[in-house]
Length: 205
Image 1 (cartoon, rainbow, N blue to C red):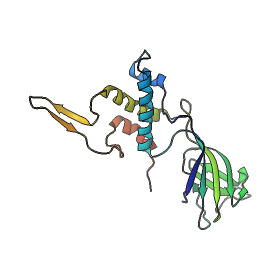
Image 2: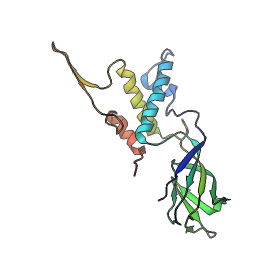
Image 3: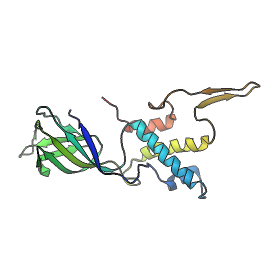
């Protein structure tokens, strides 16, 4: 299945946060505004952690994927962002296709003939401009937001405690055990967050 060799963002998201301050304050039972700045920082930081773990962008943006199949292919073109919300245009070898010349589902776009049957994509430069991603508080999946809230809750309650410390023993001498690992594969994330975020993780092939 062909993948784009270049992706360009045309309209960037105003924010990449995966939850909002009001929701976080309800989650942490905070009623004053004294910690708003710190909470806003945690929202951005932990949203970035979730995005990095899932290896994909969630914020709704307009992007252009450019394909150059080396030969004609009957398989669909697979875009870099999911889910596709709408397609603005598909330009095939310099010619803009009509909306009846293709169909899409999730990340896949099929080329259609004049009767509506699926046909091959040609060996040509193909530019696909489309809108993809979720909108905060409307289409963003609730379990994805919940995973970010779990991360924020852990970061908030850990406070000044070393987040890599997993056990501590005082008994006269003192001992602290540390968790090792980069966290890139989720080994440093809480199990509750992993269970929620893993549904949205994209694995490289």
